[in-house]
Length: 116
Image (cartoon, rainbow, N blue to C red; front, side, top):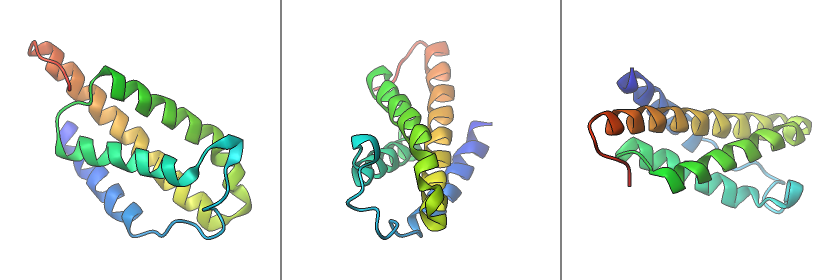
C-alpha cells in the first residue's frame, strides 16, 4: 500500500511543481502566515518523504501543525480560482505525505527502529 501511495505522492509532486505560485498572493499573509514559507515547508516535507525514511516525531508534529494551518486557510483562497486549486493541491500533497510517513513510522516501530 505504501508503494501505491508513494507513487501517488510522486504524481501529486509533479502536478504541483508544474504550477506557479498564485499571482497576488506573494505578499498576502492570511492569519499572519507567510504563504511562500508555508508552501516551501510543506513541499520540503513531501520531498523528504519521497526520498527518505520516516520523519521522526519532531518533524512529524511540525508537518501536522502546518497541515492544520493550511486547512484553516483554504477558505481564504475561494475568491481566486487558481489560488484555490494551487493551495488545495498543496494540502492534498501534504496530507498524503503525512499518511505515508505515519505508515513508515509504524513499520519502523515494528522492526524496532525509528525515524530521524
